[in-house]
Length: 277
Length: 353
Ligand SMILES: Cc1cc2nc3c(=O)[nH]c(=O)nc-3n(C[C@H](O)[C@H](O)[C@H](O)COP(=O)(O)OP(=O)(O)OC[C@H]3O[C@@H](n4cnc5c(N)ncnc54)[C@H](O)[C@@H]3O)c2cc1C
Ligand code: SF4
Ligand code: SF4
Ligand code: FES
Image 1: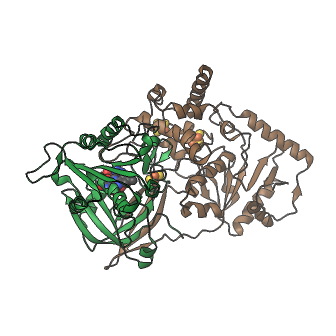
Image 2 (image 1 turned 90 degrees about the horizontal axis):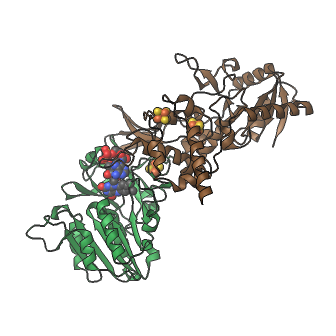
Image 3 (image 1 turned 135 degrees about the horizontal axis):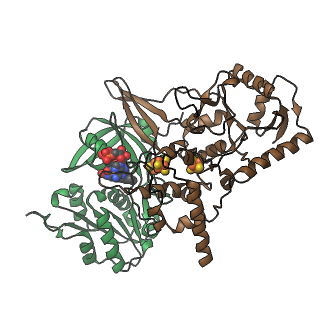
């Protein structure tokens, strides 16, 4: 039978502690046939099984053009993520996916891209950002604005440094006031403030933003001030999930199932959503 | 296709027993031993005499035959080297469900859409494919029935393979509605008597009488009001007595939400789905956030899901008007009353505009 609930086994081939409570796993399918046939679009998510414990939802945080492996980054918050955090290189987990919709990166050809991420919100943004960089020539200016509570809360530090060195993209990193340390060379300030200072122009531009709800709220206010239209602003939403495939009835916001119609939405869509998420 | 013929109760009995003898598992309403004697459930029967088709409704409807309260999805174990996963062993064989009411089959038609939405849920769909549904029109109706307001003129026929109606004479008019249903005729050990003109007249009268006995409510303005009034104060004052017990969702033939859990055994772990309810406080609880903390939000979700969200996604209302939630609610919350109130609001809105 085709069992839509049964995951495939993957091996953790690399494990990296990003921050005290965020970890990244690089994963490879145990079965070569499945590995060969697997592909996903940037923005999609998966259901990850910790054998013996349960299942949980994360986006795929690696580039959609990376065919050898996928990566996920997760924050330790509850039962499954705590058990997952104890696993390491060589351990096996289960994976079902890819699920949900995606960032329409090909539709953005010829446009300027502004990425605005906060905290672990960089996980979905990174997949999108890396996928766009893989076809850099398609876009005009690319800007990455990323902030975290403190220096130790910044994820993907090695990559942040690599991106900073590139001259075909602009990077702005910031930490909340009080979160800096003596060696911090980036900005100090909340993401929306830094965004306003960077002052990207709305003409021919798409903004992709992910982060804690409170950050998103103020980022939206700032973008409004700078005359961005709702249609130009893309984000992802979270709701509690179980099945990830539109069956268990858990993840809806109004008539929209985050697992089927999302997780990627434009602000023009979200504006009409009932406020219950 | 429709073919009509007539059977005496005695012949019906013999036909059903022959189907059982031919090896068909037959499920029908029976009293569950050890529970309240009023409660009927769909159970496998050994002979037709064990079925009770004289009472109007089973406690929970037939959905659990296709979407069991607990269902194994797969199991896995560690073999010293890695994990191996196994599908549950299920043999999908043809089976018969007899003694359904028209609204019961309507409920299945509703959740078919969900389980075949994009990702095909074979656990459910394979059982559906194998099932042959023999519906019996209602011997009487009760004050909680409002099926015709949702499903249209009585009886809803689309979901049944065969439909039987008992006439005053006690004989049954049998309507063969599908090829699947027709197949069962070969097990009928007699010459088939086509229904006469008189019989058909009586059938129509019988069905019209049932239709007339069912309470009619207006629901045509419900959806448009729901679409525009998520934040209305109506919600804050509705269903205040609700205990969040979830019974209304468990007895509902169209409620389909489930949880996915791990059943840990020493040698083998099983991943299982188990019925869940949007009435439960933990349904949408995440570590840092619970968007439906207050219970009115959960009742709003229940009604919105049935009469607005589901309609948007699947073009059908996720309610059959069976009235089970009304009968089973321990504090007397009545969806029929709520729908009428909402429809009234919808009308007033229209009038103003
Ligand atoms: C589309 C999507 C993408 C996500 N991507 C990421 C990511 O890349 N990195 C990351 O750290 N987190 C991500 N999350 C949030 C992540 O799913 C939860 O933090 C995680 O499920 C918590 O699981 P837990 O068992 O540790 O927590 P518990 O609170 O113990 O959760 C129990 C169950 O509730 C569900 N659940 C709880 N919280 C959430 C939540 N916020 N969202 C969805 N389901 C939840 C899970 O199914 C879990 O099995 C994402 C959520 C969604 C919906
Ligand atoms: S049965 Fe009644 S009390 Fe229980 S959850 Fe439903 S409405 Fe609330
Ligand atoms: S909501 Fe109530 S009346 Fe409607 S189908 Fe469910 S149990 Fe029956
Ligand atoms: S997560 Fe199950 S319906 Fe969306």
